[in-house]
Amino acid sequence: MKFYPKIITAIAREVVQTLTSDKDIEIETIRIADAEMDMAAIMREYVATEERVNVATREAMQRRGYDFSRFQQVKREMADVRGFKMGDEGVDYIIDQMLEFLLISRNVEEVFSDDATMRRKIHLVMKKHLAVDQELDREARTRLKHLKEGTPAWDIEYQKTIDLLRRTRGLV
Image: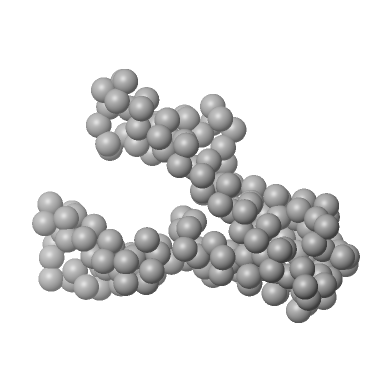
């Protein structure tokens, strides 16, 4: 699951909207925008930290003389050293941060539901928005049926198609 900066605001808005409409939390109408910005800030900080891990990974690979094929392995090492959670663990970490925020925020009047209930609802919202990569992959593969998967031509066209789809959907 990848957090695209352009969908962070939509995720934050839907999380706050879902929790308030289901009466899990109470927020004064005047403070809803502030609560949404706080939720978005949590996700933006995660994205910024991930970028710092990516930079450290590229530097480590350059120092070690590795090629790009080992990027994920080295990134996992860099993330472990920094205590950075990736993938599903990263989503759980962000949800933990959001739940903690709800309890201490001046923008939230009252929290009525337990963590497990709110965690499940937040996870559903995130899953909906973060499934974009799987949709992009499916669509790209559909468009490239005329090429044999695994060939250099397929790899090049696949990346071009993914980039095009990301741009047309406003993700980058």
